[in-house]
Length: 192
Image (cartoon, rainbow, N blue to C red; front, side, top):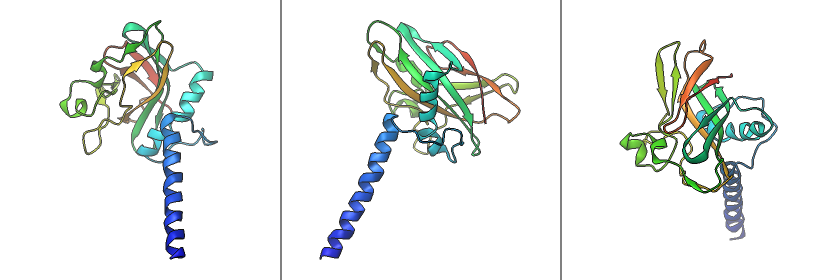
């Protein structure tokens, strides 16, 4: 009986440790010493790739600043190409205005499959002018966009770390345009 409880308790502690780690990652409080290492997978780049960038973005000049409606500002802090064929764009969505503002629903785009998963940056696109191609935010097998979701209202001065994941343009394409509905366009450089 005591072995069964010990094994059960051990499983519970492991599950709690994993859940705590995921919660820290979701809040953006994580970030180890691996800032210079590329993320090995799409899901890892979604989680670990956005934390160092958000922290670095506070000390560095953003790659681009896209101005939105009612004082919203999207500061892009990194655009990293990984070995899996993806580009993860990370940054901060900030309310630069003096009053609370709702993130416009148009940022989710107009695809029914994406909209049904709630407010997001699913309408964002990368534009490769050189290759004459447009890349849309990736979706998982259930149609959920691989981007920050659950966007709502931002208080005055509030900043929220965000990410968007796209298929990678060819390796000889280093600069792309970033377009997000209701925001100005910007040009960003892809690293990695």
